[in-house]
Image: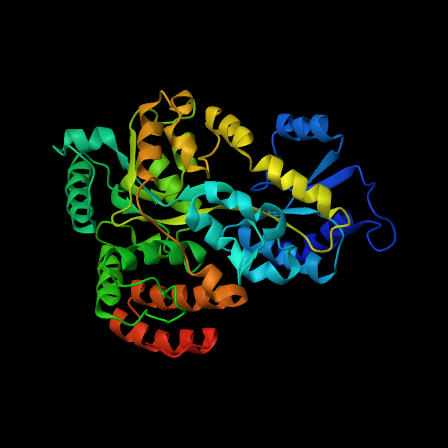
Length: 417
């Protein structure tokens, strides 16, 4: 946070330089970078060639939490740049008041996207963000170790995963790999734990924290049993330090060959197959038992942009079928358009990628960000802190969820179920 506060003034100056009295030329648009990486130059060049509108890609801070604070600060300052913002799928509700309602311009085009993504971009009937990148929580596994230990397929339930992870862990440690673990995941108190815990809870039939009707449903026996079971993994099939693991912590253990299973996102697969990777040819991917949490990115237009018409044109261009097909063919991201999963021309020859695309075709679980709206950050924080208290054995899941229920009810302003 200290680093963010030091960088923020400079970034505000960069993004809004001259913003109060001098706008960018009408032929130039600004867009934030995607996950701190520039958009492919061929895409930006294609837009410029087609429209004559130049583009400037603006860097952002690395941490998602810090990027969200950047956005909030710039919108608070009513900066005229950036025109287009790349948003995490859970941010539209928190930033909706400062985003343009795209429904009058793009609403009729939303029927071709995955409905759950469109829902996350819709806040109180306003379409404030359009699907750009789809991601889903996935289960990665060492395919070579599954074969070695006599398993013909990956686990289909958490109980199967626990049994398989324990058997492989014992076997590998007998070989002398003392630091080998069965399963690594994201257990630190942050948004990643909300994703993991919601998958445990939903797979057990324990609800989704806040239901579609706005009712808080977290205090129930199935949710408590699922979270208590996960607490049992800590120190048995998962390292004690997993309660402080974020994405890269889990990935570093898995890519070093010290874990049989890992919960992760789509990009992990590409990293595992990179030249020089110890895991190349040894990794399989399948769905999370019960379904993975929905992730990804969306595009929104700042209501302070001085070139809203052109910005909407850019959003339509970047999220269109032509651009998504190109990105899929280059194996960059999974598409937000269901039709692309069925086109023979874009079916991957890589069997691992085929499995990945098959895995994300199963049920996905949306976090209650569109329902909670601007209060989602408070909801998620209360939830992951309660779950973390169970993982660290400071209280039982039953007690933690019983205390969480009225807290969440107060935050969202609904009557508890």
